[in-house]
Length: 426
Ligand code: UD1
Image (cartoon, rainbow, N blue to C red):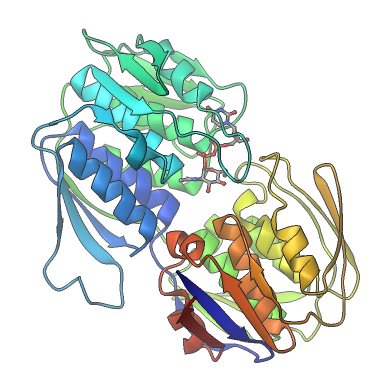
């Protein structure tokens, strides 16, 4: 196992290229299950989660090939996923347990093959995270759902039928699953209270380029007119708004100036608003978004919400920022019930944070001190890296595999803007 050793105290200056978005890439990869033609994705980040899903798609019958020349490049890879035939309709426990997003194969498989059996993803570090909304939505399209031996079996031997799906609350994954399933259903599907995240719009754009008839993606109501068949496509994965937001915080915390090359300001507006509230200066440039410090970090008030609200995936990183602010902040987590695991670890570095239910009060402190820390999820790990960048002395972040799930070439990108960071074996 590897760990990251960070020596804090350097202001970060320069340009960081933003990778393709992990959370867009995962559902996009699953679109290959809906067609017997190849789906090629440009700008796929090199991340552990992408490799995990590639293995699962391969197990189900898709060939996965890396385009010549894209293997060793600094930019994301170009991969082609081709499921000419589905060999297996079972997504086994051993593969699904590694990554909850594996549930995204369910909609495509049942739409194309009339049956799919997927292991239940199980518990997760950031809360209970059930999949009931995914299953109820598929039922609304006529699938029969059975749960047995830790697996969910969805079947629709005569094909899925268009219907109305009304989500009681917003779920990104359930919206994506049903969107994919509805493309091949007979008739029209209406999805109400759909997630509006930019990753949903990117998925719909890709599906439409495959011949799907989707309108309204990015809004509360999405309409899908089912088609008989989808064909192959070539699609560019959108930039990662969470990666960009994380490096934006690094610029502000270290009193630096970073151009987030390729970032899309519109997709990350809530994070940029919060940065400005804390005193950051944000400038939209032709080839990205520049974030710099005015020399001060102020306190902020944040409540996580579905898009276009403040993203839960940025909560931990903003808590690291708040812990060095000149003032107090209140951060409320309203999406997941157990997403404050970074609090005790930040506390070990000198942060002053009190949690009361789903809210954390953070009293800014003049300095954090380096420590040996570890986190139990991806974004929490990034909050510790950010704290390490400004802490006095050395910070060691253990369990690096969490970061490798979601931040492409993390230490390389940080070094590029002047950080003192090293990956070493444990
Ligand atoms: C996706 C993102 C994740 C992000 C989250 C919220 C991917 C691969 N992951 O996760 O990074 O943190 O959106 O923006 O894109 N829920 C249910 N029943 C369900 C489904 C969800 O109760 O069937 C609950 C969840 O426990 C959670 C809330 O709904 O409390 C939102 O979860 P959801 O939007 O589904 O998150 P994911 O799609 O898993």
